[in-house]
Image (cartoon, rainbow, N blue to C red; front, top):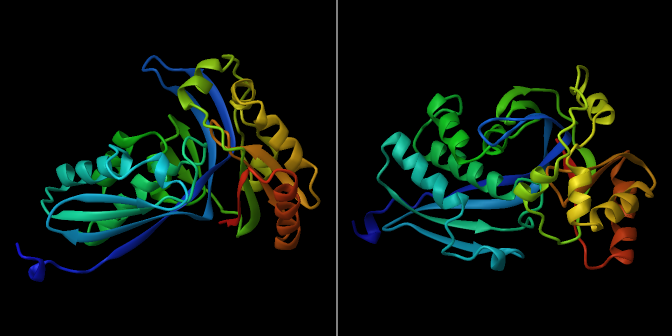
Length: 285
């Protein structure tokens, strides 16, 4: 196929940061995973995936965290394309660009969000409905967080975290995400979980459940990366804070705020105190 005959439609798909408003670990499973109850929500900002038809597959990575991935990495974006191609019998090639704005290994689903964005773009391209069971099956194979990122809205996750029930969102609640730029291995954090079942998330509104919840992986993450504790303390000292919590297996922590002004003041204060920390002022849908 010549370059002049290639369809030039370019699709741009956001890959917003995933937040675990609560993360309750209930048990270790025989398959190596853990039985979870987790309350997902999504920021308005994150990575961006761009998909363009091409004569051959390629991946280019830009953005502040591009160097941590590289253009030739066998990452979840590449796997998502391969899995979609197999599931739906697609033979077209694509040039994929990933604008990597979120830190890696940071508990906010960066890789999973990128894979989900790739699946959404491919689904749009090939007329696949978001409710197609094959799309969900592909997401589940790619990783436990990918189905939630594919859904892209507030939801209660059970099982591995991939059995989802949508819940009410937080109506663009102002939020600040902060990471001390310490990589935290998800496997290492889960391996340090103390095995104590501290109970279910319960029932109620999304924010009420978040406030009453916890992150059972936080002690393990703090043992691996003590900066997590200092980060949460710094967030908790800010005015207008509704909730502070570590997301996922860390090391990113977040705070929800009464309004955008107090969020922005907190962002400025933390940047002054800890200029090396990464942060993102955003809103949670």
